[in-house]
Image 1 (cartoon, rainbow over the protein chains, first blue to last red):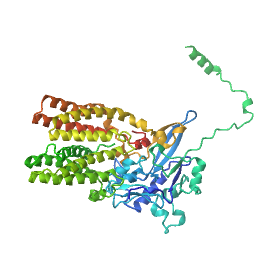
Image 2 (cartoon, rainbow over the protein chains, first blue to last red; image 1 turned 30 degrees about the vertical axis):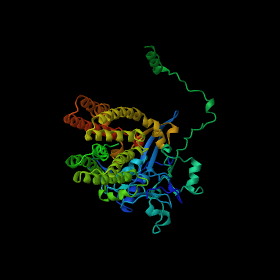
Image 3 (cartoon, each protein chain N blue to C red; image 1 turned 60 degrees about the vertical axis):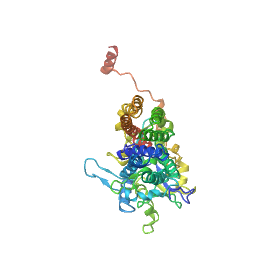
Image 4 (tube, each protein chain N blue to C red; image 1 turned 120 degrees about the horizontal axis):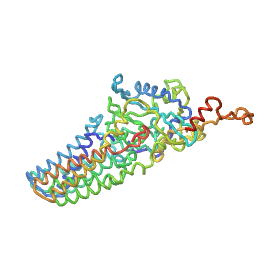
Length: 248
Length: 290
């Protein structure tokens, strides 16, 4: 049913640390791997070894350059996948009921057997979290690895989304963002976790931790300020050249 | 947004088709026998042809019947119900008009109401999307309804009504463009809010996630066709409103009406192409594109 649940028992989601992410794309590869081999239609590629390769991905890593008013520019790697919004516009537009948000944990899923591939949900998503698979003709999206997190056949350490398990930098965290005592909620509170495009009114569950402010290099030598300043005027040939060029 | 041919043909053909069917259902003209047959044949061909064309862009059209289930929330589902109700009501009305020479007013009026509701539901598919600010405003349903009944009036032979509606559509189109050009910035999404990094400084897309193309860019970031947008706007406006109006003011013969209708149709096709090609989806912000 494409009516959104009024509340969900849990709000499972990801917390992504933009300070820590090194932009290695390991999460992208592990996501593609897990979700091709397991739940639902595989994430297909088209012309994979040709001149114009494309394919379906549920997670992609962008990189942005931020230029502050003063100081050097900063490069920020930015993984983006479904944010499992509380007010998910992709769910209500679905004509068939294939798109739904689970009442028990808040995960937004697609029932691929009911999806007609109209693409309206992808249009409704501001984040580009949904991609139509060109081979299967059904909409693919992050499942929060619903086939891992409850899977008792896996060792407990693996019962987290594939991207979280893989991240070598520890930049991805998984947990219940509806429980204010959970580790992820404490992390969000401590680091000022933020929503993407809050003006769209989607109330995303996933949060992003902003990069920490850059350190300023401390004065290493207490005597340094008292040292003689290095002569700024050039002497000798370079000094003559400087003056000569100045005079022209 | 990517201007998909099947969706452009669907919205234009079904819009005009349901416009014509609405007039026929209201008994304007209250045709019977062969005349009714031809009028309804054109109306049904356009409306049903458009609806069939819309299924061509589906990934799995064999499951299309499931689209009738979610009318509580989904405009696409409502569109399905409205269109089927309209076609059934008008099918019964047409049957009696063609074979028994009787105009069943109840079925006709119901059919007309649901025909217009279908066009409204089509427009709401686009209007509801906050992600496309140019569409997410009152001008979208007004334009769809105006063009639907203008084309319907033209095909039903109501010359003066068609004249007034085409002038109204032309004026409304200019208003739509003027307001629409400001919508994206008014909606307030930019690369800073998209990444949440805007307060830290100027954000620039440094490196995309992949070197190739993807579904999102193909479907929602359509920058190619926009360089001719201004010329196409003039072409659309001239063909869908100015020239047909002038033709009908000069002559109101059958040939003049036919010529006006064909030019109007081409103009509306250009207008609808622009409707998609000029619409900017906020997801483009993540790619530093619009």
